[in-house]
Image (cartoon, rainbow, N blue to C red; front, side, top):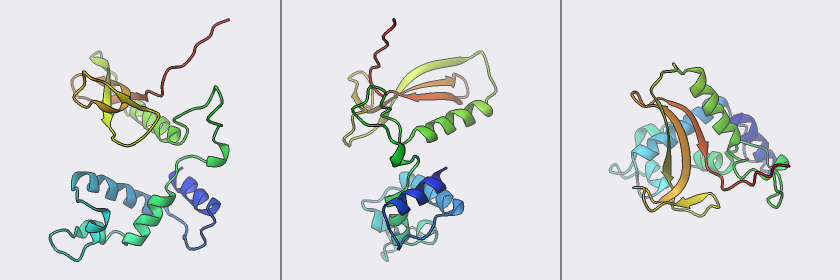
Length: 174
């Protein structure tokens, strides 16, 4: 899914210099993003720095900085050509990440061992940027971010299902 959509978006942008992405490259990219989230540096370029205090060998040897930036530029999960108009009443604000959310939910439920000790709770994913999905909750430790509903095992913490809050929906019954 990610490979297909990333290649499609690169071709839609008419970038002749971008070579096709493979599944192995996408897996490497996602691994690099996770590692960058754990080992934070002030600037993306620092992971490829010649300064031994900043240079991260595992990242620098996985792919070049140019390739990393190119993949990040074209990383896509859903086709923009099919994106609904923002002014439509049925517009899905999560359209661009919906395939990933659906995939995560299916995988979590497939591998689940249902127990009687499940809980449903809301949590916040910290986000400081601009988004129409961003919420502000005064009573939460993370005050600003994306509001997510989660169903999880209360003992192990295993996630069964998650749902990102995309704003109020009007349910008009006739």
